[in-house]
Image (tube, rainbow, N blue to C red; front, side, top):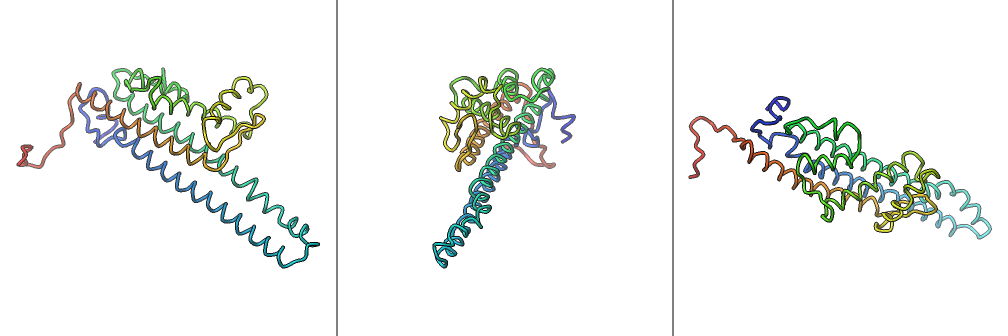
Amino acid sequence: MELDTEFRYPNVIDFFGTTLFHLCHFTTIDLHNYAAYNNYSEDNIKKSNDMLCNEINEHLKNNGGEYHEDIIDSYSQEIREFGEFYPPMHRKAMVITLYNFFEHQVKTLCAEINKLLPQDMSDKYLKEVCIKRYRQFLRREASFDINQGNLLWKRWEDMLKVEQIRHVLVHSEGEIEKHRVERLADDIENYCKQKNGIRLIRHRIIIDEGYVAGLIAEFISLFDLLDRQVNAFIRRYESEHGSYEVPLPLGASRTPL
């Protein structure tokens, strides 16, 4: 199937052969891989820290008290790396990566749907990178059920807060800049109060263990919900333009035996 010519309004389309049909499903597979990587990284940092603690304790046990301070001082860099540096670095990188992945996948979904509309709406909704505009596109042009009060709306509202958090992590190392405090602090603080593993302390975002895993679970939930809306969109399209029938081999019959 030539997608450039056939995956366009108003053709009868083999949706099973298109990116649109599989996109949300494959996205959730990728998210499960991100979850496995996150668990692997968190476990490795913990194991390394435990090994370090055991090594320090062994030295303390085998040496007199007068040497303990020097022993601990000799490990100060490693203690800081596994306690203060590596965990927040990993979690910050994961939040940024996950949000960017979400943003890209949603824009791809919108672009695929846009090909099936009577009029190209990309300049109106997709020209700028903005997940709020992407939501408007899906609601208004594709008739997705993303309405206030339902779970998909709630998930999307949460991602708007994650977008703000990602911006702060990227541009100011997790600290809300003074000129942005009034606009961002309340939104981010309210979000942090509702979620496990993330805090706002003196306008600095602190990401604890468990937040990234919870965020991935919410992304998976969101794309599961989007997948249902994609299938509903496909059914609406097929009811208007007809459904594609796979060509059968010569002599084969569609009549069930």
